[in-house]
Length: 290
Image (cartoon, rainbow, N blue to C red; front, side, top):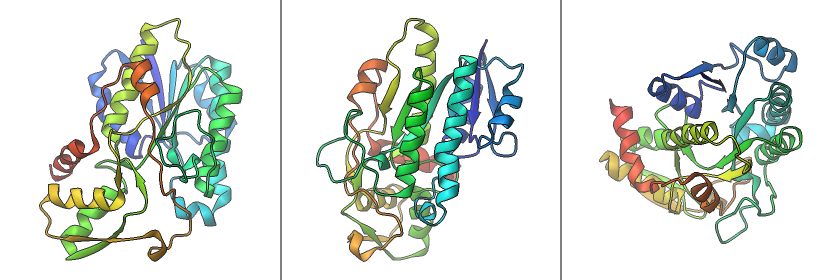
């Protein structure tokens, strides 16, 4: 039987994998969060893993408060970099394949075409910098890994842009949303599905050699303004979305102006058919309503 350890299982992606796990009776999942496993302590991970034979480790844990990271650099570094270093070390020692989730914030956002996996990284925030350090630790310590950079994650779980816009759209007549930050929303349900697809592929292919970094988001390109507008339309909210720019909407952390990810590699290697972002909003909203 395949054994999978999932860290950060109470977050958006971890919760989606937990929901999907019932569809995989031949896989043994172990779901953990801070209460069960402190990934910032290598001794705790060693103790937890002792006597267990995990085949895969899906790391969904991270410090994701982008603005908060600017004021709490030590915690961001601990969770996004040092914890990944610990997980990489244990994975290497125990012959576990780690599947790690990273971010579009590793790029500068100054580009004008979708970023490929080979593009130069240049994070503009503490969050992006610490996530890149985590990527580098994993690459150095445990080369046989899969890192998936994603963007604008949303789901029925936790805090995210879609849920915020849904709630504010019911309460307010108008909202201001930026138009000069462009990327692609990612439905965490879809990402969770494709992580399981990747694991199934690795299980079947004992000679798999294409380890490394991949990009995944839903298809298409939009601004936060476009995303917010579509959310109100799908939800039948009467709230009017007005456009503004980043200069009028100051935040502690600098956001990338353009962070669209090129997904050619993951589509080719894993033969993925990725849905467009517009078509997935209704699926998520219906789940929230139900």
